Amino acid sequence: MKAQKRRILLIIDNCFCHNCVPCHLEHVKVLFLPPSTTSILQPLDQGIIHALKQHYRVRVVRRMLCNIASERDININILEAMQMFSAAWRALKEEIISNCFRKAGVVYAEDDITKSEELDDAETEENWKRLCEKLDVPTSVNLTDYVNVDCDVIVQKEITDDEILADIMSDGNPCDDEVEEEDVPQSVRQSLTLVQATNMARSLQDFLLSRSDVPESVLNSCAVVGDYLERSFVSGSVQRKITDFFKK
Image 1 (spheres, rainbow, N blue to C red):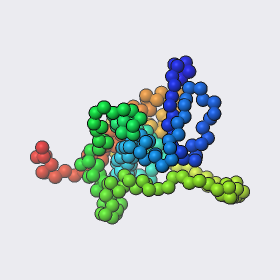
Image 2 (tube, rainbow, N blue to C red):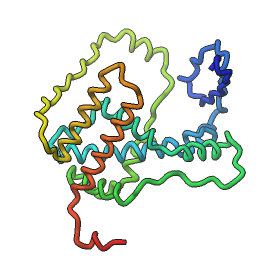
Image 3 (cartoon, rainbow, N blue to C red):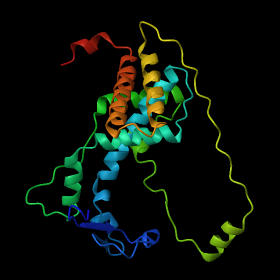
């Protein structure tokens, strides 16, 4: 930033865990929002977080359907979650972010602000229904409930001195993460099924992430391919009705 002569305004809410901002910032000015105004003045709360959750959870539903169909473990590990979250962020439209900044009043809006992004609902709803049937999810739980499942979850609270001391003095040993065994790659065949191609794309993405010399553009391209294959697999595994071919 110094070489480019840029200056950054960093807007932060008044959460106690954000009070550790470095004192010596030459090109960054930190501005704390007034108490109890985050839901109104913070652009993230105006629709960015919600849109990001939509994109991410749509991918989670597709991934779980793929895992069920290919008889893989239905659980999604942290690495896979990070990959899907990264893909969700790349899929978020710039205009959504801009509109949220304008809605929060950070940028002056001269015209009407468009509504937040809505995903393709027919495909997403169909995938959600299929997943509910396979996992015996109650019919009272709809897709909106799933997207907003953690809206009221308390993510932070002020820690007391007694709690800090108790945490330091505890002699509990952290649990070792279980090491997952990777599937042994099968020999390459002349023709691959969509399931095999999807699994291979995921293995390729894991391989690229294990290397330190892979450009970000290559990682992004691989993620796009994997996302495309998963979407094709999930949509292609739906048994069509004769009436589907006559829909306009």
